[in-house]
Amino acid sequence: MNNRWVFSVLVLTSCAPSLAGQIRGNSGEIIGSREARVNITRLDAPSDGAQAVNNVVVAVVDQSGRYATTESLPHGHYLVEALVPGYAPQSKRVDLADKATVDLTLTPVVTAKIQATSTNSHVDEDRGAGRATLTPPSL
Image 1 (cartoon, one colour):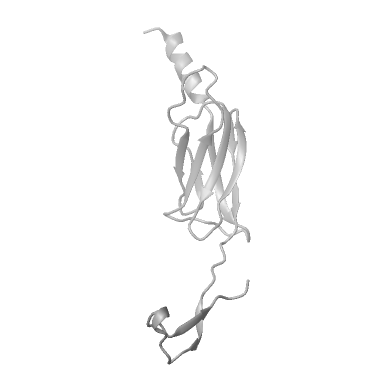
Image 2 (spheres, one colour; image 1 turned 120 degrees about the vertical axis):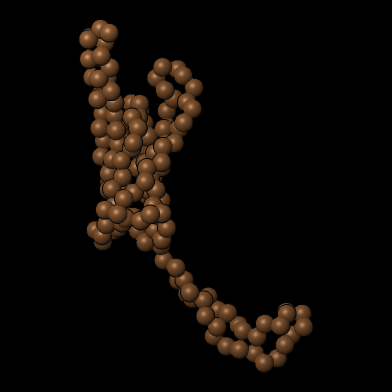
């Protein structure tokens, strides 16, 4: 085997771009969840004219809120989107030329609770057997 060829393969492999970052809440808290995901979507076609087969890479978020790609990504434009239950999704566009760090800040989703404000002892046959009047909270 030719030593130059082996060296070229090692250099090309080590120069492949990668993507990593950390997810935090808007108060600075670390968001680490087993259900958290970061989708990395390729926005442009490969430069070699090949058909794009896998346009989305999913990175898992660890307990320290960090994520990283486990595979090399070709140079190009990407959309990095964090999806965490209880938080609004957040995304950034990035031009991946070498190694890139993309940190994302998420905002908690406000949930509304509905409670019964009054009860009615009269049953209206047209409305079913329910006796509670529900009033949504004002937002």
